[in-house]
Length: 273
Ligand SMILES: CC(C)(COP(=O)(O)OP(=O)(O)OC[C@H]1O[C@@H](n2cnc3c(N)ncnc32)[C@H](O)[C@@H]1OP(=O)(O)O)[C@@H](O)C(=O)NCCC(=O)NCCS
Image (cartoon, rainbow, N blue to C red; front, top):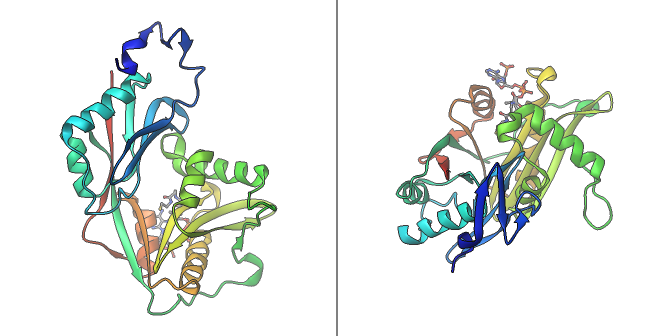
Protein backbone atom coordinates (compact mmCIF):
# COMPACT_ATOMS: atom_id res chain seq x y z
CA UNK A 1 0.00 0.00 0.00
CA UNK A 2 1.47 3.44 -0.96
CA UNK A 3 1.56 6.51 1.24
CA UNK A 4 -0.99 8.13 -1.06
CA UNK A 5 -3.59 5.51 -0.13
CA UNK A 6 -3.98 7.13 3.25
CA UNK A 7 -4.43 10.68 1.96
CA UNK A 8 -7.68 12.61 1.81
CA UNK A 9 -7.89 16.11 0.43
CA UNK A 10 -10.65 18.66 0.71
CA UNK A 11 -11.52 22.17 1.84
CA UNK A 12 -7.87 23.19 1.37
CA UNK A 13 -6.75 20.70 3.98
CA UNK A 14 -4.94 17.40 3.52
CA UNK A 15 -4.84 14.71 6.15
CA UNK A 16 -2.71 11.60 6.57
CA UNK A 17 -3.88 9.23 9.32
CA UNK A 18 -5.98 12.14 10.59
CA UNK A 19 -2.93 14.40 10.92
CA UNK A 20 -3.08 17.73 9.09
CA UNK A 21 -0.23 17.90 6.60
CA UNK A 22 -0.04 21.65 7.08
CA UNK A 23 0.98 20.83 10.62
CA UNK A 24 3.46 18.16 9.45
CA UNK A 25 6.08 20.61 8.35
CA UNK A 26 8.37 20.16 6.62
CA UNK A 27 7.08 17.42 4.31
CA UNK A 28 10.57 16.40 3.44
CA UNK A 29 12.32 13.20 2.59
CA UNK A 30 14.46 11.19 0.21
CA UNK A 31 12.57 9.89 -2.83
CA UNK A 32 15.48 8.16 -4.54
CA UNK A 33 19.00 7.10 -3.76
CA UNK A 34 20.92 5.73 -6.72
CA UNK A 35 23.55 7.32 -8.95
CA UNK A 36 22.22 10.58 -7.53
CA UNK A 37 20.27 11.27 -4.40
CA UNK A 38 16.90 12.94 -4.76
CA UNK A 39 15.25 14.79 -1.89
CA UNK A 40 12.07 16.75 -1.45
CA UNK A 41 11.19 19.61 0.84
CA UNK A 42 8.85 22.62 0.60
CA UNK A 43 9.81 25.38 -1.83
CA UNK A 44 10.85 28.59 0.01
CA UNK A 45 7.79 30.68 0.97
CA UNK A 46 5.46 28.33 -0.97
CA UNK A 47 4.63 25.35 1.26
CA UNK A 48 2.33 23.64 -1.25
CA UNK A 49 5.07 23.52 -3.89
CA UNK A 50 7.66 20.74 -3.52
CA UNK A 51 11.33 21.45 -4.13
CA UNK A 52 12.93 18.45 -5.86
CA UNK A 53 16.65 18.48 -5.12
CA UNK A 54 18.75 16.25 -7.34
CA UNK A 55 22.43 16.01 -6.44
CA UNK A 56 24.82 16.40 -9.37
CA UNK A 57 21.99 17.79 -11.52
CA UNK A 58 24.32 20.30 -13.25
CA UNK A 59 26.39 17.44 -14.68
CA UNK A 60 25.73 16.99 -18.40
CA UNK A 61 26.15 13.21 -18.08
CA UNK A 62 23.75 12.59 -15.21
CA UNK A 63 21.35 9.79 -16.17
CA UNK A 64 18.08 9.71 -14.27
CA UNK A 65 16.27 6.40 -13.76
CA UNK A 66 13.64 4.89 -16.09
CA UNK A 67 10.46 6.99 -16.64
CA UNK A 68 8.45 4.44 -14.57
CA UNK A 69 10.57 5.37 -11.56
CA UNK A 70 10.32 9.09 -12.33
CA UNK A 71 6.54 8.65 -12.44
CA UNK A 72 6.77 7.02 -9.01
CA UNK A 73 8.62 10.11 -7.68
CA UNK A 74 5.78 12.29 -8.96
CA UNK A 75 3.12 10.09 -7.30
CA UNK A 76 5.05 10.07 -4.01
CA UNK A 77 5.45 13.86 -3.99
CA UNK A 78 1.78 14.30 -4.82
CA UNK A 79 0.84 11.88 -2.03
CA UNK A 80 2.66 14.15 0.44
CA UNK A 81 0.03 16.80 -0.27
CA UNK A 82 1.98 19.07 -2.64
CA UNK A 83 0.09 20.79 -5.47
CA UNK A 84 3.13 21.38 -7.69
CA UNK A 85 6.83 20.54 -7.83
CA UNK A 86 9.86 22.48 -9.01
CA UNK A 87 13.41 21.16 -9.49
CA UNK A 88 16.94 22.35 -8.88
CA UNK A 89 18.74 23.62 -12.00
CA UNK A 90 19.24 20.69 -14.38
CA UNK A 91 21.63 19.95 -17.24
CA UNK A 92 19.95 18.99 -20.55
CA UNK A 93 20.10 15.18 -20.03
CA UNK A 94 18.27 15.01 -16.69
CA UNK A 95 15.92 17.78 -17.89
CA UNK A 96 14.95 15.73 -20.95
CA UNK A 97 14.24 12.71 -18.73
CA UNK A 98 11.86 14.67 -16.49
CA UNK A 99 10.05 16.12 -19.51
CA UNK A 100 8.91 12.57 -20.35
CA UNK A 101 6.83 12.60 -17.14
CA UNK A 102 5.21 15.99 -17.71
CA UNK A 103 7.72 18.54 -16.40
CA UNK A 104 7.99 21.86 -18.26
CA UNK A 105 10.46 24.77 -18.15
CA UNK A 106 10.14 27.23 -15.28
CA UNK A 107 13.45 29.02 -15.84
CA UNK A 108 16.15 28.96 -18.51
CA UNK A 109 19.67 29.55 -17.24
CA UNK A 110 22.92 30.34 -18.99
CA UNK A 111 26.15 28.87 -17.59
CA UNK A 112 29.15 31.18 -17.68
CA UNK A 113 32.78 30.34 -17.05
CA UNK A 114 35.86 32.45 -16.36
CA UNK A 115 39.30 30.95 -16.74
CA UNK A 116 41.79 32.29 -14.19
CA UNK A 117 44.92 33.10 -16.07
CA UNK A 118 45.38 35.67 -13.30
CA UNK A 119 43.20 37.06 -10.50
CA UNK A 120 41.10 40.03 -11.62
CA UNK A 121 42.83 43.31 -11.12
CA UNK A 122 40.16 45.44 -9.55
CA UNK A 123 40.94 48.43 -7.43
CA UNK A 124 38.74 48.40 -4.32
CA UNK A 125 39.22 51.15 -1.71
CA UNK A 126 39.80 49.48 1.67
CA UNK A 127 36.84 51.20 3.37
CA UNK A 128 34.30 49.71 0.96
CA UNK A 129 36.01 46.39 0.24
CA UNK A 130 33.72 43.37 0.77
CA UNK A 131 34.40 41.47 3.98
CA UNK A 132 34.05 37.81 4.87
CA UNK A 133 31.11 37.16 7.18
CA UNK A 134 32.52 36.05 10.51
CA UNK A 135 31.23 32.81 11.94
CA UNK A 136 30.44 31.97 15.53
CA UNK A 137 32.37 29.26 17.36
CA UNK A 138 31.03 25.95 16.02
CA UNK A 139 31.12 27.36 12.45
CA UNK A 140 27.60 28.77 12.61
CA UNK A 141 26.48 32.16 11.39
CA UNK A 142 24.61 34.38 13.81
CA UNK A 143 20.84 34.36 13.37
CA UNK A 144 20.89 38.15 12.94
CA UNK A 145 23.30 38.00 10.00
CA UNK A 146 21.44 35.07 8.42
CA UNK A 147 18.13 36.91 8.65
CA UNK A 148 19.66 40.00 7.12
CA UNK A 149 21.11 37.97 4.24
CA UNK A 150 17.78 36.23 3.64
CA UNK A 151 15.88 39.53 3.65
CA UNK A 152 18.34 40.97 1.15
CA UNK A 153 18.06 37.83 -0.99
CA UNK A 154 14.26 38.21 -0.99
CA UNK A 155 14.48 41.91 -1.91
CA UNK A 156 16.82 41.00 -4.80
CA UNK A 157 15.17 37.86 -6.19
CA UNK A 158 11.52 38.35 -5.14
CA UNK A 159 9.20 35.92 -3.34
CA UNK A 160 9.16 33.45 -6.23
CA UNK A 161 12.90 32.73 -6.41
CA UNK A 162 14.39 33.72 -3.04
CA UNK A 163 16.22 31.35 -0.73
CA UNK A 164 15.14 30.22 2.70
CA UNK A 165 17.51 29.25 5.48
CA UNK A 166 17.76 25.64 4.33
CA UNK A 167 18.42 26.56 0.70
CA UNK A 168 21.13 29.00 1.76
CA UNK A 169 22.72 26.30 3.91
CA UNK A 170 22.53 23.82 1.00
CA UNK A 171 24.24 26.32 -1.29
CA UNK A 172 26.88 26.92 1.35
CA UNK A 173 27.62 23.23 1.86
CA UNK A 174 27.38 22.23 -1.82
CA UNK A 175 31.10 22.83 -2.31
CA UNK A 176 34.10 21.69 -0.26
CA UNK A 177 34.98 25.24 0.74
CA UNK A 178 32.82 28.32 0.76
CA UNK A 179 32.69 31.93 1.80
CA UNK A 180 30.05 34.58 2.19
CA UNK A 181 31.38 38.06 1.43
CA UNK A 182 29.31 41.13 2.23
CA UNK A 183 29.41 44.77 1.30
CA UNK A 184 28.22 47.05 4.11
CA UNK A 185 27.43 50.73 4.37
CA UNK A 186 25.86 52.65 7.26
CA UNK A 187 25.55 49.41 9.24
CA UNK A 188 23.45 47.70 6.55
CA UNK A 189 24.41 44.83 4.23
CA UNK A 190 24.12 46.28 0.72
CA UNK A 191 25.07 43.11 -1.09
CA UNK A 192 26.47 39.64 -0.64
CA UNK A 193 28.10 36.93 -2.68
CA UNK A 194 28.31 33.26 -1.78
CA UNK A 195 31.34 31.71 -3.44
CA UNK A 196 32.49 28.11 -3.18
CA UNK A 197 35.23 25.85 -4.49
CA UNK A 198 35.58 22.14 -5.09
CA UNK A 199 38.87 20.96 -6.54
CA UNK A 200 40.02 23.44 -9.13
CA UNK A 201 36.56 24.87 -9.89
CA UNK A 202 35.09 27.90 -8.18
CA UNK A 203 31.35 28.60 -8.10
CA UNK A 204 29.54 31.86 -7.60
CA UNK A 205 26.50 30.35 -5.92
CA UNK A 206 24.54 33.49 -5.12
CA UNK A 207 24.89 37.21 -5.67
CA UNK A 208 22.41 39.83 -4.50
CA UNK A 209 22.44 43.61 -4.17
CA UNK A 210 19.82 45.81 -2.47
CA UNK A 211 17.62 47.44 -5.15
CA UNK A 212 18.25 50.98 -3.85
CA UNK A 213 22.05 50.83 -4.29
CA UNK A 214 22.26 49.09 -7.64
CA UNK A 215 24.44 50.39 -10.43
CA UNK A 216 26.94 51.83 -7.94
CA UNK A 217 29.54 49.08 -8.26
CA UNK A 218 28.53 46.93 -5.26
CA UNK A 219 28.22 43.71 -7.30
CA UNK A 220 31.45 44.44 -9.18
CA UNK A 221 33.36 44.65 -5.92
CA UNK A 222 31.71 41.46 -4.65
CA UNK A 223 32.46 39.54 -7.85
CA UNK A 224 36.06 40.81 -7.92
CA UNK A 225 36.53 39.71 -4.29
CA UNK A 226 34.89 36.34 -4.97
CA UNK A 227 37.19 35.75 -7.96
CA UNK A 228 40.23 36.76 -5.95
CA UNK A 229 39.23 34.24 -3.26
CA UNK A 230 38.59 31.51 -5.80
CA UNK A 231 41.98 32.17 -7.44
CA UNK A 232 43.68 32.20 -4.04
CA UNK A 233 42.29 28.77 -3.08
CA UNK A 234 43.66 27.28 -6.30
CA UNK A 235 40.76 27.34 -8.76
CA UNK A 236 41.63 27.53 -12.42
CA UNK A 237 38.06 28.40 -13.44
CA UNK A 238 35.00 29.95 -11.81
CA UNK A 239 31.49 29.12 -12.97
CA UNK A 240 28.18 30.89 -12.45
CA UNK A 241 24.67 30.51 -13.78
CA UNK A 242 22.00 33.12 -14.25
CA UNK A 243 18.67 33.44 -16.03
CA UNK A 244 19.05 33.97 -19.79
CA UNK A 245 16.95 37.15 -19.54
CA UNK A 246 19.00 38.65 -16.66
CA UNK A 247 20.85 41.22 -18.73
CA UNK A 248 22.15 43.03 -15.62
CA UNK A 249 23.92 39.91 -14.32
CA UNK A 250 25.10 38.82 -17.77
CA UNK A 251 26.53 42.31 -18.41
CA UNK A 252 28.26 42.21 -15.04
CA UNK A 253 29.82 38.76 -15.60
CA UNK A 254 30.92 39.63 -19.13
CA UNK A 255 32.74 42.65 -17.74
CA UNK A 256 34.83 40.11 -15.76
CA UNK A 257 35.55 38.05 -18.90
CA UNK A 258 33.07 35.26 -18.18
CA UNK A 259 32.16 33.34 -21.32
CA UNK A 260 29.09 31.32 -22.14
CA UNK A 261 29.46 27.55 -21.84
CA UNK A 262 28.16 25.03 -24.37
CA UNK A 263 25.16 23.86 -22.41
CA UNK A 264 22.83 25.80 -20.15
CA UNK A 265 20.62 24.65 -17.29
CA UNK A 266 16.89 24.59 -16.71
CA UNK A 267 14.66 24.65 -13.68
CA UNK A 268 11.61 22.49 -14.42
CA UNK A 269 8.20 22.33 -12.79
CA UNK A 270 5.06 20.22 -12.89
CA UNK A 271 1.53 20.71 -11.74
CA UNK A 272 0.28 17.92 -9.44
CA UNK A 273 -3.41 18.79 -9.18
C1 LIG B 1 22.76 41.78 -11.03
C2 LIG B 1 23.10 42.62 -9.81
C3 LIG B 1 23.81 41.74 -8.78
C4 LIG B 1 24.02 43.79 -10.25
O1 LIG B 1 24.38 44.53 -9.08
P1 LIG B 1 24.94 46.04 -9.15
O2 LIG B 1 25.57 46.34 -7.85
O3 LIG B 1 23.85 46.94 -9.59
O4 LIG B 1 26.03 45.92 -10.31
P2 LIG B 1 27.21 46.96 -10.59
O5 LIG B 1 26.80 48.34 -10.17
O6 LIG B 1 28.47 46.44 -9.99
O7 LIG B 1 27.28 46.89 -12.18
C5 LIG B 1 28.40 46.40 -12.86
C6 LIG B 1 28.09 46.22 -14.34
O8 LIG B 1 27.07 45.23 -14.53
C7 LIG B 1 26.22 45.62 -15.63
N1 LIG B 1 24.88 45.94 -15.13
C8 LIG B 1 24.49 46.04 -13.84
N2 LIG B 1 23.17 46.33 -13.77
C9 LIG B 1 22.74 46.44 -15.05
C10 LIG B 1 21.49 46.70 -15.62
N3 LIG B 1 20.39 46.92 -14.86
N4 LIG B 1 21.38 46.69 -16.96
C11 LIG B 1 22.45 46.44 -17.74
N5 LIG B 1 23.69 46.18 -17.25
C12 LIG B 1 23.83 46.19 -15.92
C13 LIG B 1 26.86 46.86 -16.22
O9 LIG B 1 27.83 46.41 -17.16
C14 LIG B 1 27.52 47.48 -15.00
O10 LIG B 1 28.56 48.34 -15.31
P3 LIG B 1 28.23 49.91 -15.55
O11 LIG B 1 27.35 50.37 -14.42
O12 LIG B 1 29.60 50.56 -15.53
O13 LIG B 1 27.55 49.98 -16.87
C15 LIG B 1 21.80 43.25 -9.19
O14 LIG B 1 21.08 43.87 -10.21
C16 LIG B 1 20.90 42.24 -8.47
O15 LIG B 1 21.05 41.98 -7.26
N6 LIG B 1 19.94 41.67 -9.22
C17 LIG B 1 18.99 40.69 -8.65
C18 LIG B 1 19.68 39.41 -8.25
C19 LIG B 1 20.51 38.84 -9.38
O16 LIG B 1 20.13 38.87 -10.54
N7 LIG B 1 21.68 38.28 -9.01
C20 LIG B 1 22.61 37.70 -9.95
C21 LIG B 1 22.14 36.39 -10.40
S1 LIG B 1 23.47 35.26 -10.48
